[in-house]
Every structure is written in structure tokens, then in C-alpha cells.
Length: 261
Length: 265
Image 1 (cartoon, rainbow over the protein chains, first blue to last red):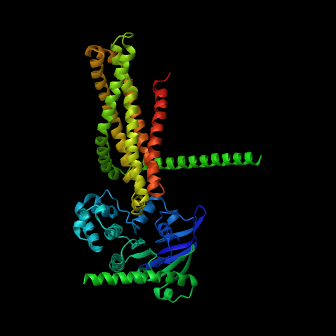
Image 2 (cartoon, each protein chain N blue to C red; image 1 turned 90 degrees about the vertical axis):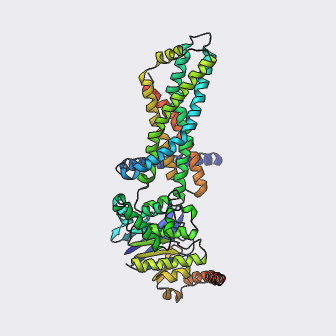
Image 3 (cartoon, helix red, strand yellow; image 1 turned 135 degrees about the vertical axis):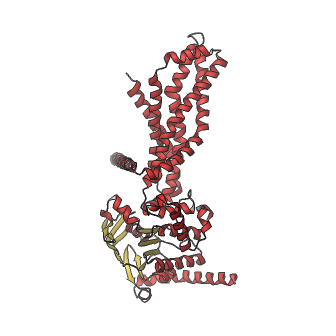
């Protein structure tokens, strides 16, 4: 379980999080929604200790993240897969080498065959062909880079998966593919996931529960149906703003499918 | 009156801000250095990457180091001829060329070239990795950026820079010798006599010791600057230039300090 209690964070004069509390239950997928620059990625980075809150407590798997020593934090991070917004792949390494870095199993040091099998397995899980393993990130499309990022995140067989804007910068077709992948990994691997996004349609598809981060605070938490039925002015404003984008995306997907058939 | 108070206040603010920034850098640098020492235990991770880096940096820098050392040897030889002809015995030229190359030109020129070549490369590489979240990605995988990225670069520099310095010394001496033979008409016997007459084994040790310190400067400082890069592409550019300037100034400062400690009276 992931618990954030009364988290405060500011960068110079800019208050990013002001008393944020959130709970992610084991096995569920929680989508953290909100407009750009509201502190969604900051919240995500606090869960695996990349950023420290100014005040408040982050507890993952019963461990207080801020109080962990270096070795303990590394050990915890090996149980948390993190998918970065722009992939954050090591561009001088091949796809296989990138994924190998995610394998935290000690066997990897002595058994190359085990590692190669694991790389192939991770590529299969994200719907990529085995020959992609020998390519460099520069040779991949945006959607493929995201999928390799996901493959690297799941290579260590994590208990938790944190997605930072997994569909941002992708066309609607590829965004759909990634959303499908998030669902599939939840079902096949049984991981607890937090998906940070500003895409309402995709988030409602993948999430068991949705939280809306609005003006530095959690404004609403609930199932997609509960959020859709909310009468809160901020929730309505956010959903209405996104509705237009969803319609445009849906139209675009329909056009692509029509052209393809 | 009000204007003077404003200027004084601004000056105090400026000094205060500069002091805080310097203290921040000193603290972060110390922590990074301690982390590097701790990371030495993870040899299984950094050793293969160290050899990879050393090969790239070493072979890549060899040509420019030899070229500059050769020119330095030739110019030293010509200047020695200009100053000594008719006033001092010719064999002194052998001494001047060998001592200049080994004591000063070899290590310092190599250090300055590598400050530009290795320093800019390390700062830009690590800076790009920082702004594209590659370093965060390593940390999020439970891996240490110190043993994966920093230690291989620093250790590669410590392996390669002293070796390149010795090559530069040899090249400078050789080209200086050839130039002296051609332009001054000095015999091989006179040149080697002069070179040997003033040579002490400490000179070579001094050259080697300096090159190790310079290796530290051209690797650790750019790594620190690159590792702490902020603000996108502009930040990476700034990190690269800052790293080159900081490493070059450090080399000149270290040159004075080491000379005073080892050769000063």
C-alpha cells in the first residue's frame, strides 16, 4: 500500500503541494489527474524518494520513505517500477542494455542467458518484437520508446508501477495502445499502479479510482463513475475542459481506423 | 543618502548570496566526493565501464596531445636557440628543452587540453543525462549513478591523463631534439649531455604527481558540474563551459601549489 499523509512541497515561492493526502490500495490502479504544472509528477517522485516533501509522510509497503537509509531506499526502489514521461532511456545503450538495467536480480551478473530471456519476456509483455532489443533509442518511434520505458520498469518484477504521463506526446492510436498496456500489466502482473495524467479518457479507462489534484490539493477521489457524477465546480471545470480534447481524439482515432480499413 | 544605503544593501545582498552559493557548492561537492569513495566498493559495476571510458578518452585525446606537445617542444627549442646562441654553451639547450617539457609544458599543456576535451565531454554527457531524467531513471531502478556514471569517468581520467602526460613529455622532447639539431646544429651527444646534466629522478616524479592531480581536476570538477545541471539545453551548454573554465583554473592553481610544495624552498 502507498500512503501519502499531509504532504507539503514548495519550490522557492511556488507552493506545489499543500496538505496532500492519498492512499493507493494493494492491487488497484489509481489515476492522478490534474492540469499541467499542478504537481502530479512531484507527487509521483516522492513515492520512490526522488524528491523529499518539505512536510508530511510518504509510506510505501509500510516503510517511511524519507527515513530510509541509502541501501534501504535502493532496495525499496527495486520494488517500484517508474515509467518516465519521455522514456528517459539511456541513449548510448541498446534497448536490451536499457532493460537489463532494470533487472535487479543478482543472477543477472553471472547468467547472461537468464538476462537475455528476461529482456525478451519484457519486450513480449509490452508488445515489442525481439529484434528491437538490438536497436538504440534513437532508432525508435515515440510510442516504442514509451513501451521500452515500461519494459525497463517491469524488468525487476516490481510490486508497484508508477507511470508519469505515459501517453503524453503520443498520437491517439499510440495512446490507446499504451492505455491497453497499462490495463494488461495490471491484470497479468497484479501490480499496484499510480498513473499520472491529464488525459481524462485514458485515465478513466485504466483506473479503478481517480484522484483530482487541483490548486495544490486533492480535490476529489473516487471511482470514475463517482468522479463523473461529481457536482464539485473544480471537477466539472476540469472534465469539461478535457471533453473537447477527448472528442477531437475520438474523431482522430475513427479517421485513422477508417483510412486503415 | 538613500542611494548610498541602497548600494550598500545591494552589495551586502550580493556578498551574502555569493557566500551561500559557495557554501552550497562546497557542501554538495564534499558529499559527492564522499559518495565516490563509498562507491569504490562496487567494483563489479564501475570497472568494465572504466575501461570503456578510458579507451574512448585515451585514444581520442592521443593525437591532439601529441600534436600540441610536439609544437611546444619545437617552440621551446627555437626560443632556447634565440636566447642562448653566442652566450651559453649549446648543450644548455638540451637541458632547457627537457626540463621545460617534463616539469611544466608536458603536464600543464596536457591538463589544459584535456580540461577542454574531457571536461566539456563529461559535463555535457552528465548534464544531458540529468535534464533528460536518465540519472533519475537510474536512481529509480535502485542503481547508484555514482558507480554507474561518475566513478568510471573519474577513474578513466586517473588512468589515462598521467599516461598521456608521459607521452606528451616524450613527444615534446623528441621534437625539441630534432628542431634543435636542425636549427641550432647541436649534436646528439651535446643534447643528451645537457638533458642528463640537469635531470633528477624527482623531475619525472614531479611530472607524474602533477598529472594525477590534474587528472582529478579535469574529471571530478566537470562530473560535479554536469551531475548538478539544471534548466534544459541552456543549462547543459552552461555546464560544459563552466566545467572547462573551472577545470582550467584549477589546473593553474594546482600547478602553483604543487610546485611550491615539491620544488619550493
